[in-house]
Amino acid sequence: MKDVKLKDKWEVQAYRWVSLCEDEIVTWSDCQEFTLHRCTLDWSVRRKSSRGGWYASGPGINIAMNISVKNFNEVFRVYEYPSFDAHPVIGGFYAEDYNLKLGMIICHEMAHAVQYFRIKHLGHLRGKPHGVDFKTPYAALRKKILNPKLPNQKITKNKYEELVNSIVKNT
Ligand SMILES: [Zn+2]
Image (cartoon, rainbow, N blue to C red; front, side, top):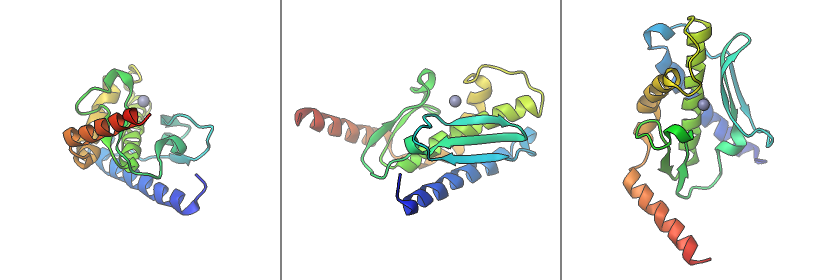
């Protein structure tokens, strides 16, 4: 993305999601000391995946901005990790605003940051990367922060299917 103003706009949105997540996480009884030590918004086109985890000094996230946002609003499907993409709370969804995709990615990576905070700071055992120790904080963040902002899924799915059908007809 070359437009500096648009980049700024997306970065403001990203920090908003991060701070909503942080405000929620510190209300959890074992996470009162949780603070993000690193928050990198990486616009490099070479960066193809986001990450959340433990850095040298504490929990952190690194967001692959180029693949997370686009500057147009047309209905699309946001995909989650394949093993839970179909889940009603933590799965993928239909949307028309890339800010919601960005919100999903940030909730996902913040849940990994919590998972690693519990391993490294609280001494929990290391489970599967996308196992229950990830899914529990992720579901809590999704329910509280992102899911209430999602559009009606039935209506948006219909819109998406109409769009796909019109593309198929015209080619
Ligand atoms: Zn993940």
